[in-house]
Length: 209
Image 1 (cartoon, one colour):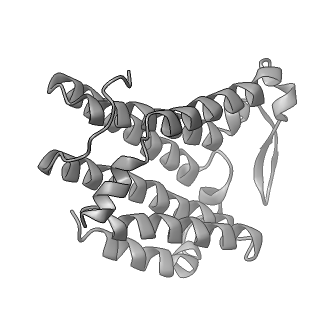
Image 2 (cartoon, one colour):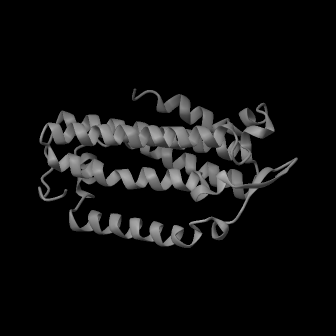
Image 3 (cartoon, one colour):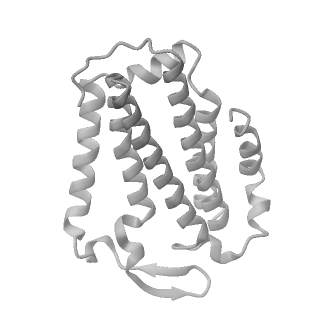
């Protein structure tokens, strides 16, 4: 599993050329690549939920708490990829750029979208600080068990996706690389979970949940 990051690095590096062979519709909003991202993020959320339940069942409440507070991040990323629900309200179709949608403000629940996002982020930040959740990845890194390569791939992929969007204006390349980024996030989370199971040395308060 730890070797999977290397072919993924190659795909990101060659994404400009790979994208030139893919149908233009794959890079559209609501296209194949974007829905693939949603599926990947949903898989990450489901896996994290399973690991949370697994940790609770084994009465490892430190790790259960960590996984529980990772869940909002997956959900926020899913919401972002769905444009907070805008993808379900198409307003038309451009022959080059693909479908376009109503604004967030025009959504039936548009007024509460950003306040809800702000509340979730604020609650997550409070939990990270109050329960010192940052100690877990820090200790994994200090002990040499943090999935550094996978995490670097995540950062690298998002950087390339940003360049593809802002400088190359290449939607297919952007969406393809974001797929790699989200898959790499799952790999990072999985390898961190395995490392936590192998050796539980991180001491955190038990009153997380």
